[in-house]
Image (cartoon, rainbow, N blue to C red; front, side):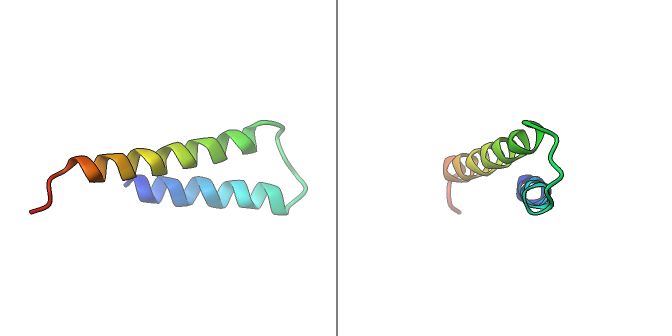
Length: 51
């Protein structure tokens, strides 16, 4: 689920960068949220023991 959120936020950020229509810091906030979701996913994957 977090990967889906990461991809959606990343696509929205790229769409804001490619089109010159930006909502100020909102687009960059989406990028930060996408990166945080990715980092959280990577950290939680390492905590689960491999079976």
